[in-house]
Length: 243
Image (cartoon, rainbow, N blue to C red):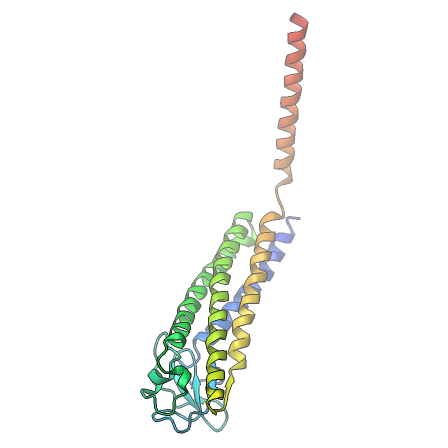
């Protein structure tokens, strides 16, 4: 059973590393114009008639972008940490902006918290990746990696839920106002795939921590209990002889 621990640890590390790669691809969207980052976005909507807006407009992790003739992100605005999805704020106007976005902070807070939780999930995932090396050779490393991955999973699941909420609601709001809008399928798939990767990695790290227990220590414990039992029996026999 001990031989199974490094195999489980390697599979878990592979899934964990894959999830971290997808996290970086998501987080860096809008931060660079290079490929493949220029293909990733959360939401795209036609915004013709809205002053100061690109048409169509794409919301990425770090910037609001337009679209070039190849269907890639282009003409991105200023890069901002925790960029909110809030069309009146993004375009600095309420003219022709769908009514659902006006007078509410719902979308603002959903997107801002999503960005914060994404970074927290990334932090614990990276920590788990380093402790995962210990999981290859020790049960304690497996449990410690499982704990860190589980924390990353918790925040990533919240992130995925918040992202899905504002993206779907935002798309529906644009469509109800007569604009064309659709979800960025790649980042949506990335975010939920990360959740699946972290979940499976957590389970594998836990299993790796339980398998391969030192059988000799179990035998020693059993032997110790057996010797104690014999000793108690002999002592009781001696006492009976002298009584």
